[in-house]
Length: 205
Image (cartoon, one colour):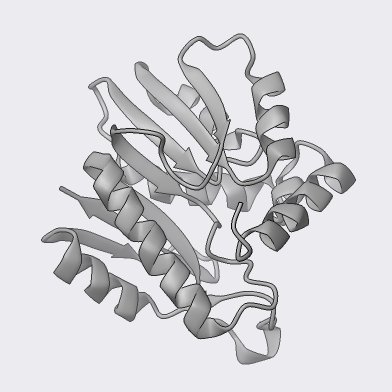
């Protein structure tokens, strides 16, 4: 774990210890918003065909529950920087042969798709420039690891100013759309119309 992410890992470990395997344990307000986020991210996946997907920042494995309701045939790898999160996820899904959980920051090998929900939100004391570099590096890794596409979300810079917190990162959706369009694929979608103070970007290859 590098110096940049070690405090973030501890932040989420503390949340898990306080709230358990619950949306609050991964710093979301509740299950309704969590499911809405998953629905946006999973638009990048292929319905009707088998696929592999890496869940970067998997937390306690809530996305896997969502995937099981929507897709019939897939292989899932959950990746998280918090050792406690990985252990909690592995316990919750111990009986599932098509799922595995590892500690880390990126997919351990090639995968059809990768998704990342919320991993760019909590920056704690990091500077904006440092955090933007981290986002770019992470997106590069997701692009390299995937053969069919990837998706991620961010808090939006269009959030109400009086509700923005200094320990969180609010990304410019236009800037990241442009980055993905120029660097990763011609087929990029920006979703900013689902009622939360965030956006989702889908990159299809």
